[in-house]
Length: 123
Length: 179
Image (cartoon, rainbow over all chains, first blue to last red; front, side, top):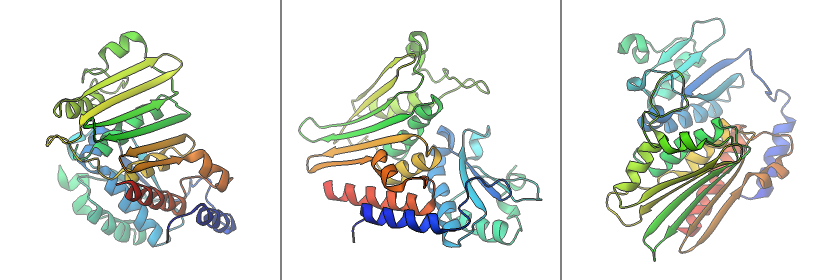
């Protein structure tokens, strides 16, 4: 069936009914995808999409996926920085949608960073 | 870039950084003239004549961290290799219009690619801006106007996953109708 404005109205009602609609999310996990010329050219758009879809699919409520500009290491793009509360920030490089799914499962859900994808392993 | 839609994603970031409140992305696939024209218009801060004169140069940027800005020069190169061209008009305090056209049937033209993905990434990344996405082909026209969506959604922001998902599907269906 085709998407209609009536569906959008349903989404509105459903969203407003969720008690914990996140306006801001200071306490949660942050996923930041570099989305400048270098990141976009290297494939950041499908990586961002994969993180968003995976977080939605797993219904992770305290995770925000956001974008930023050029992080400064263009040759390592797509770069994704993940901050889990209480842990040090982890920088992932040369990301792909497939790697994103594994990072969500192991790092964001199980709190175990995927070391082989990090900048420390690449450099 | 592998897709023209990736250039659009990149160039619209400039409009967002220029503090635009309204951004229009216009795509016109004109078979009879064998032209694919992309126009991006914003009401952001605009550029001075001096900056505008040098903006296609990859060593011109507003960035202070590094001295290179590749976005516009890459877009222009992609157009030129199909026999096309890129033009920018801008006025300080009024905004910027970037027009770029490609040889529609040129074998050197990258495919337009995932426009729904580009628009959803833009809207999700800067949900407070209003966007018009207009896409014309020989078969018809598709228009997405986020002001209409805002009327339906009320206080619910665009960057809610369900909303972005709806927008993605709405664009994909709309484009399928005119392709």
